[in-house]
Image (cartoon, rainbow, N blue to C red; front, side, top):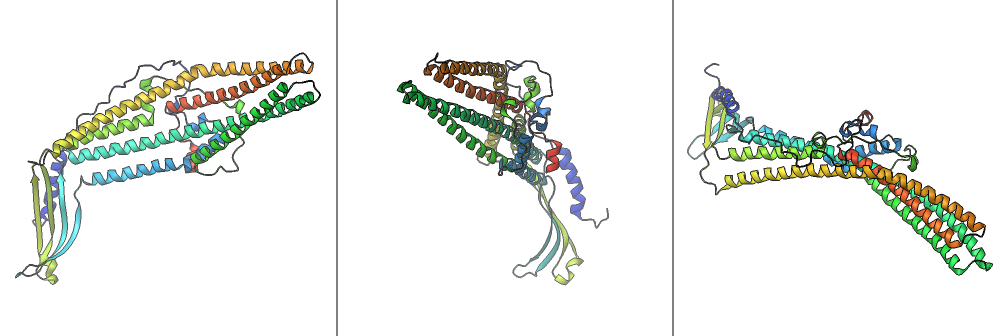
Length: 464
C-alpha cells in the first residue's frame, strides 16, 4: 500500500480479520433432548416394505382420480401457498440478519456551514457503526435466523403431509358416501315394493294395520338415510373443493368402486428411527436450535460492544476544488454496559425461558407423533378383522332376508319377520361401508403419522 492509501481501507482488513478471529459464540452447546417416549410402539408388528417417509405419495395412492386431486391441491391449496411464502419471508429475514455481519458502505455528499466560518463541502465513502462481533452476538442472531428458516421449511413439508392426507381422507369419505347413497336407494326401492304389497294385503283384509304401518316406517327410515347420505356427500365434496383450492375439473379420471378401494400397509419401525423423520418434529427441533442461539446473543449483550465508524473522501471550502483535497475520519467506539435497569439480565432470562419452552414443545411434538402412530397401529390391529366379520354378517343378513321373503311369500312367516330382516340387512350394509371407510382412513393415518407425503413425485414437479 502507498502512503496515500485511505486509512479506512488500511484498517478495514485487519479489523475484519480481528472480528472473525475473535468471534466466539456465547450460546450453550446444543444437545438434542432424549425422546420422552417408549423405545417401541405398542402393538407394532414387523412388516416388510419401504418406510412411509421414503414412499412418494404417488406410489402410495395409486388411484388415478385421487392422484390427480392431490396434484391439484399441491398446486392451488391456499394454506400450502402461505407456507411456501413463509419460507420466502424467513429467507429474507435471514438475509437481513446476516447483513449485520458485514460493514455497510455508503456514498456521501454534504455541505456544512456555521456562523462566521466558510462552507465546507465533502464527498466520499462512509462506513457507519459496524459492530465488531467479538462475542458472537451478531453471529448468534444469524444462527437463530437460519434455524428459523429451517423450521419454516419443515413446517411447509408438514403442511404438505397434512394436505395430502386430508385430500385422501376426504376422497375416500366421498366414495363411501356414494356407496351409502347406492345402498339407501336400493333399500328404498325394495321397501317401497314391500309397502305396496302390504297395502294390497291390508286392503284385502289379509294384513293388519300394524303390518302396514311397520312397512311405512321402514320406507320413511330409508328416505331419512338417503337424505342424510346425500347431505353428507355434499358436505364432503365442499371440503374437497376447499382442499383442492378450485372447482373440481370435469375431466378427472373415473372414480373406482368403493368396495374395491385398497391402500398398502407401511412398516412402523422404531420410534427413534421414525419420529425424527416427521417434518413437524424436525420443525420443533429447529425452533429449539433457534432458541438456543438466542441465549448466545443475550449473553453477549453483557460484554463491551465495539463499533467502527469512518469515512474517506475529499473536502474543500470551494465546491470547484472539492476533489483536490483528501480527507478521512476513523471513529472506533467501545460501549460497556454499566446500568440499564436490568434489561440485559431480563433478556437473558427470557431467552433461557424461551429455550425451555422450545424443549417442551419439541418433546410434545415427539409425544404427539408417537401417539399418532400408536393410534394408527391400534386401528390396524383390529379394523381388518372387524371388516371381515362385518362382511360375513352382511352376507348372513342378505341370506336371512332372502329366506324370510320366501317364507313370507309362502305364507309361513309373518310380515314382522320380513320387516326385521329388511331392517337388519340395511343396518349391516351401512356398518360394512363405515368399517371399510375406517380401514382406509387408518391406512392414510398410518402413512401420515410416519412422515409420508411430503416428497414430490416427478410428475408433480414437472407439472409445476
